[in-house]
Length: 80
Image (cartoon, one colour):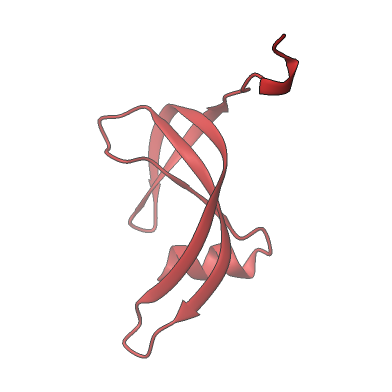
């Protein structure tokens, strides 16, 4: 709840997701739709924006944080 509130209130509407703590790669997600439910849970619609590699794990207020390195993908239109 706190993490989602911070994402929305910051105006950036982004958060990173890693499928499992043992994995070192993840995706930055943009929140397209956010609905706070009466019981405190949230309903989200997100889209992946860019990939990252986790360089160092941390925590803040009970949720995982990380220092990341952005992955630069090749532009598929550059291939001949």
